[in-house]
Length: 114
Image (cartoon, rainbow, N blue to C red):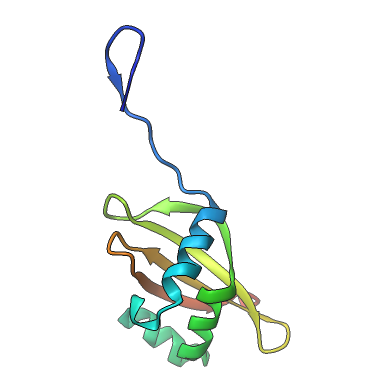
């Protein structure tokens, strides 16, 4: 918090940019035990033939698209990280950077199928 000239405090909202989120995700994903794959993501992985090794590869080498959004809990951030896999197909992994310095994989998708 900062003080205004009139002595009153004002809240400054922290915004996470895509480059910083990407750096955090890659760093956290370096250890597989830091990655939690949710039930919904597991269902989509099976449905879309996206394997866990693909998810790990995207988290470790992909690029964050868009602006990270504040998660449901303060200090958590949701974003999509994308990487080209299997020839010309791009896979997207929607992940939440948790306050516990872990990643929660919410869902996975092929970017070329809308």
